[in-house]
Length: 106
Figure (cartoon, rainbow, N blue to C red):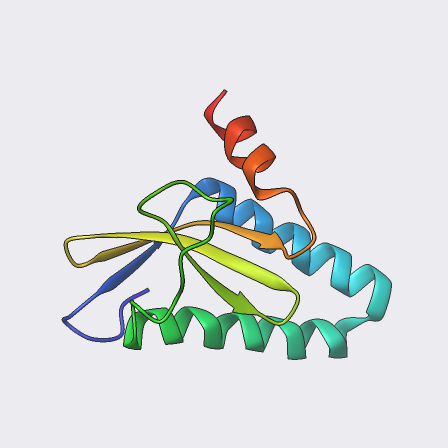
């Protein structure tokens, strides 16, 4: 996803899978209308990253060099290298982030 010549957003395979899982869960539990609303908010979160890449914050439960941006009940975890924003995960706020990152590295 590209908004301006400043930054480019790349989703990892894991972040893409997270997005698909969020869509499937929301659609099956709450219906298409709720998914459309929630999905739109997630899209807005990604656009916010492109417009304001440093709007996230550090968290003690994610590795150094990563930032987190809250979007409703989910947290977008990303890192910035040069002019690329790597969105690595989209996790529910109640998940154990440390465990997720250890699992991803094994």
